[in-house]
Length: 347
Image (cartoon, rainbow, N blue to C red):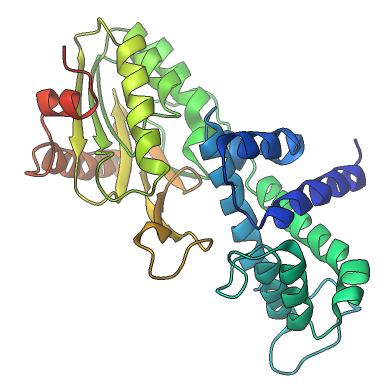
């Protein structure tokens, strides 16, 4: 498929999300929408969500919202839209897209027709002119922005990570997953400290550590604290499934649930250190004063990786270990027995 064909397909799939106003009223409707969007669903930012269709939907929605915000920071790609001195052309396009996708107070829960009319007002054109001449180029520019964001964050590969590796900045945790697993299999580390939000996408690394008999201390966010109606259940479900299946008879796993607001993420695996961050994003589908609009994200945040035999890596590792120990023993962190009870894992 040529680049032009890919863009056309992506634009058609984006249009399906626009028509529903980024809402999913039921699991069946969500799954149907994802099935009708195979290209967008296959993109790396969505695949990072794992197999959970609710998470895939939320990750894809976030990619759309991020692209709309990016368009708001760029110049117009649609020369047919008349100039309005009160706002830049990029901002007007972003305003129109926010209205079209139901991301404004006036359009949050409205019909497709009402959202089209609101988008037309943002661009100072008639509804008829918007839907016939402006809407498709606008959605195409949005699809192009989404694809560009994926392609510009290309994968990282440098072979086997070693204890003497210098520090490197990597686009995402997923970009170094294969290298970390290869290191585990080759070097067979006997200990690991992992600070995560969830284990929904960390299974391959955890299973590799299990296979070499490593003692794992795993800190994961308490699903009862701070999370939206989809993030909390996802954390709980992935942890429950992981411990019940892959680690049911593995005594070298120590699991605790932390209650402090997520901020740092990282892994000290043998003589390798990786550190990243969790950031808070606005779920613009929700009202400004809805407490659930503040969501914690980390899958597409940058990661710093290095070996502890190198001075910079050693400094990073000492800092991470200090913060890990503080959180491990934090008074809001549940011990292993309490954590098992929260996750319904207690025998």
